[in-house]
Amino acid sequence: MMFRRSRRQMEETEDMYPGPKEQRGSFENHQRRKKCGWVVCMVVLIVGLILLGMLVVYAGFALYRHYVTDVNDRRENDEYLRKLVRQVNDSPETTWKAKFNKFGVRNEAYGFTYTRNKTAIEEYMEHINKFFTSDAMKRHLKELEDFKDEDIPKEFDARIKWPHCPSISNVPNQGGCGSCFAVAAAGVASDRACIHSNGTFRALLSEEDIIGCCPVCGNCYGGDPLKALTFWVNQGLVTGGRDGCRPYSFDISCGVPCSPATFFEAEGKRTCMRRCQNIYYQSKYDDDKHFATFAYSMYPRSMAVSADGKERVKVPTVIGHFNETASTPLNTTQIRNIIMKEIALFGPTTMAFPVPEEFLHYSNGVFRPFPVDGFDERIVYWHVVRLIGWGHSDDGSHFWLAINSFGSHWGDNGLFKINTDTMEKYGLEYETAVV
Ligand SMILES: *[C@@H]1O[C@H](CO)[C@@H](O)[C@H](O)[C@H]1NC(C)=O
Ligand SMILES: *[C@@H]1O[C@H](CO)[C@@H](O)[C@H](O)[C@H]1NC(C)=O
Ligand SMILES: *[C@@H]1O[C@H](CO)[C@@H](O)[C@H](O)[C@H]1NC(C)=O
Ligand SMILES: *[C@@H]1O[C@H](CO)[C@@H](O)[C@H](O)[C@H]1NC(C)=O
Image (cartoon, rainbow, N blue to C red; front, side, top):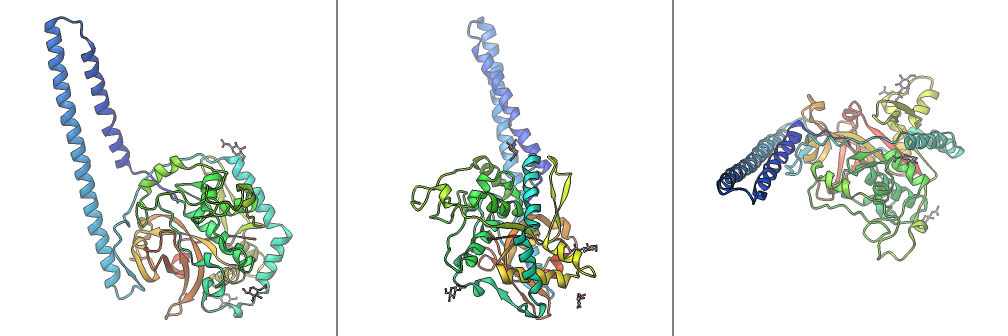
């Protein structure tokens, strides 16, 4: 996820703080001149009182303005969003239902800038390239190739296919940290570790381990699930959940979802703790690490390597491989088939997509952007979720079934369906790893 800080917000902060502070300083200076003559003292006192009065009026005005602007903003936003929700529910064309979510407000916001560590990213790229040419990857590609198109189920739900893996049904809550990429990656890791072990391993792996100990993966303002999964291969993940080694530490009481305005504080508290919480007696941190064999991206993409993000390199991908080796370029059906085979054989993957504001008010059904026009203007941020299945609507169109990280009160018990045709043109990315 990436966020921009609105100009209005920056101006507000700059308006409020330096003003009153300077005035208070000059008032204190005047107070200190005790040894002056009587008249001078009176003058100074009067000037001081005037300044104090101005300060009080100014602060009161600033507070009032801040409060009123805020309330007006929210009212406008509420009305606009309630109208949007009504339009969705009243339209005969929509295939989903909306419910007004008071937390589903649009945030322009938050010019959190960070400098990428070029050396670290290049190291990760080296690993990703090495994974792709490994024998394990060759075997993996062969398994996908051997899976016949006609054997792809019409509907699929990983929870039903692997009932002995409870992590698949787990609905996480990212709370006040933009950690969707880490939450989705740790979810995929837990599911695939369980599936691979045939239900012997059933713990949740720790998103906290990623968000805290893998700075190159990302931060509370977002990150890259492919790097998070590469971290699972190289550094391993300890157990998480409530009673594992490293539970999730970020506050979840700030909303469904929390506003990016809360991420700033979380980002300040983000630390790497290489020890297990007290109640976890099972193992030491280093003994609790669980590893994957290799990580990869499904859909062709690139990765920013330079500090400013302008220099990008191509990532080797599964679909890229099949596209290059095919006699004619793959069409969307063929591309989708490869992703379905991957999920049916090995388990869930992550899915990244741009979130338009109406998505935050999703209730049930198959989500499609609404209205169709102006999608780009409605994008709130890019989001990463866990993809667990698919199906087809009555009109034959394909949808993905995914688990969001906004807790189980959001959407359809924390899950959603999303039309694949409409979203593909706005960009979807899929990343995963194999144990
Ligand atoms: C960047 O990454 C390299 C390699 O992982 C590491 O040695 C170095 O300390 C990092 N630099 C910064 C500024 O974090
Ligand atoms: C997986 O576990 C189930 C029972 O939980 C068992 O019936 C099945 O034979 C196991 N499969 C393998 C390949 O071990
Ligand atoms: C497949 O390859 C063709 C060129 O042969 C390219 O134009 C197209 O973008 C590729 N598709 C994907 C999904 O990579
Ligand atoms: C995609 O290509 C396959 C194989 O060439 C073909 O059978 C199928 O009809 C095509 N689908 C679409 C939607 O073009």
